[in-house]
Length: 407
Image (cartoon, rainbow, N blue to C red; front, top):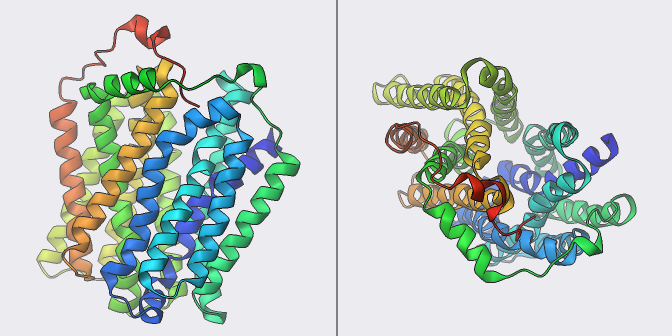
C-alpha cells in the first residue's frame, strides 16, 4: 500500500509543486520579462483556470479509456507546457504556456483519486488516501524553498526546466511502477445527457452549493496569498526569497496541521458544528487582521501571526465542507467532486483577478482581499446553511439513481 501511496502522492503533488515552486521567482519574472505585477499574476490565474475547467473532462475520459492513457496524455502536455514556459520570450507567451501546464497537471489531480477507488474501498481506501495526502502535503512546505534556492544560483527559467524534468520522470514512474487499475471490462462509453443531468441536479442543490462556496472562499484567501505574498514580503518588506519561502512554509504547516484535527473534532461536535466553528474563527481572525492594519498596527509580524491562525482555520474548513458536500451524493460522487473542485478553482481565480484590478501590491490590499473572503464565507454559512437542512435529492437517487459517468 505504501508503494501506491508514494507513487500516487508524487503524481498528485505535481500541480501544487508547479505553483509553489515558482512563487519566490514572481518578482524576478516580472523584472526579466519587463512585465507589471498584474500581468505576472495572470500566469498563476491561467494555471488555475485551466485546472478548474479540465477537471470536468478528465473523469469521464478515464472511465472510457482506463486510468493510464489520460494520465500519460496529461503528463505529456504538462512537460510541453513547462518547456514552453522556460523558453517564453514575453509575458503573454508565459501565460499561455502556464495554461497548457494546467491542462496537463489536472490529470494528476483527478486520476490518482480514481486509482485509489479502483484499488480499495472502505477503511483501506481511507488509509491509502491518508497516506497519499501525507506525501502530497510535502509540496507547499518544500517547493518554495527549492524555488528560492534555484533562483539564487540561476535565473527563473531554470525552475521550469526542473519542472519539465520532473514531469518526464513522472511519465517513466507511471509506466514502470503504476499498473492499470481499471479492468477493460469495467470501462464504458460516456453519455453526455446523463452527465449534464447530474451536474444540473447538483447546481440546484442549495446545500451542496453553499458548502462549495464556503470551501471556495476559504481557498480563495490562500489563492490571494499565493498571488500577492511574494511581492508584499520580498519587495514590500525587503525579505530575501529564502526568508519568504520559510514564512510560506510555516503557513502551509499550519494549514496541514490543523487539517489533522478535523477527525477528532467531527467525532466530538459533528460536521456542521465544526464547519460553523471553522468559518466563525476564520472570519473573526481575518477581520481582526484588517482592523489592525486600518488602525496602523499592521506589519510583517502582525500579518504573519494572524495569517498563520487564519490558514489554520481554513485547514479545518476545507476537508469538512468537502465531506459534507459529497455526503448526499454517493451515487454521483465523482461528478460532485469534479464540480466542487471546479467551483473552488473558478472562485479563487475570479477573486484574485478582481483584486488584481486594483493594481496594488501592498500588504493592506492583500489583507483586505483576504478579509473580504472571510466575511463572504461567514455570510454564505449563515444564509445558505442556516436551516441546517440536508440535500433535497431523494434518498433512492442518492443511493443508486445517478449515472456512472465519472471517475
